[in-house]
Length: 136
Image (cartoon, rainbow, N blue to C red; front, side):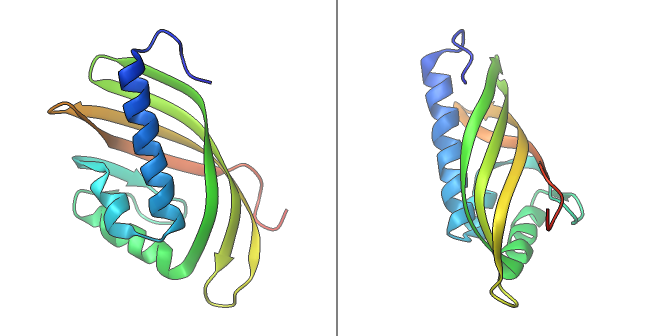
């Protein structure tokens, strides 16, 4: 669900960025994922330390070495205030553990904060959590 008071171009640009982010996760492309962040962006992954700046690509590499994702995002809320936006999403799909090949359902909720820099939207802050406990 998208807030209808948002300028269409902002909403489209943010949704396009989210689509690219989804593609980066599903293709295990750490460099692409990190490129979507602002230079001072912050990534708060589950069970790993908070990553900032150049450390973001390393966090994604670590994650992609451990798991393979096949997920899709759905936007629940998108709000823009000037050069800052926040988006609440849900993602569902599957995760495969690379060590043993085990595949399981994957379901998360996410909070993105975006910032517009030089006319381009970038991820300023991102965190997520599971919507059900592992193994449930």
